[in-house]
Image (tube, rainbow, N blue to C red):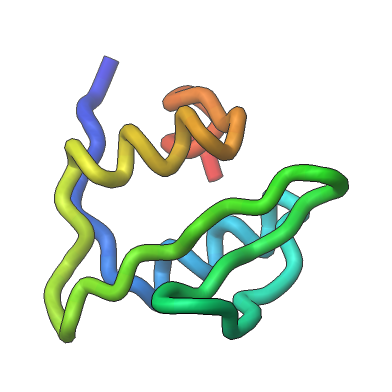
Length: 72
């Protein structure tokens, strides 16, 4: 199975929207996206890509498995 690759913030938001998340919305220090009762905090990478390690943590919190992410 292929590993996760770094993604830009725009790509992360675009792909999460395709997976049913709404947003991002402003709130506190970080923006967030919502799917049902789940509220997912979106990092602020300051013009950098989101690392594979951070992406894996975000996907785990979102309930999205790697196969679903990689096939999207």
